[in-house]
Length: 140
Length: 66
Image (cartoon, rainbow over all chains, first blue to last red; front, side, top):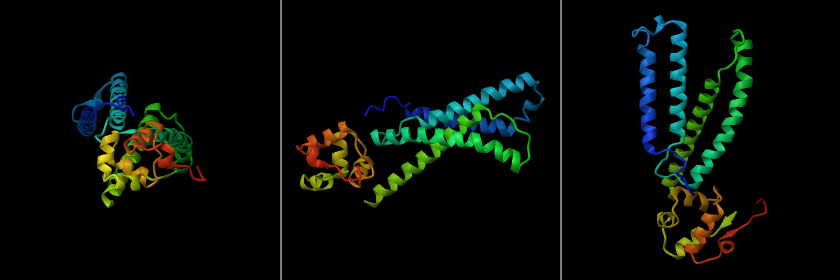
């Protein structure tokens, strides 16, 4: 099966770097004076960082591994479907938890939050699946 | 779906790795097919059958729950 639609493995390492940079920026952001920015700049900064985070997670999930073939492609495709289901559940359940358990006021969930949740779900399950396949192979 | 890949592999003295290399998939995929955890695509089934010089329906067999 053609796996050329996947990004090269380098994209994954680049994404790890971007995520590490974003985490560092989140930790030292206050010292750099990000809190003092005006609302417009804060919003722009937030849009850029969440955009970069979504892009990085996307690249991590859809970059090629040496063992990538039709079986892993099928697992990836099934995970997209599962992530849609899990993302929809998150969209429904999250406001209920927010309102009834934490008793916060209801706010619209940003699209970036759901996309990140769905991508994180896919990455986690995909890595677990890869690990279990490797473990199974080691038993043989 | 049942298959005789393991038997044919042994008959032809192939390891999982040999077969995987010949058909262009990972060893994990061959192992998953043999243990009935993964049903291969028609193209892959045809490639495997060709390696063993067999017809696809001689190598793969439908089960009642398929």
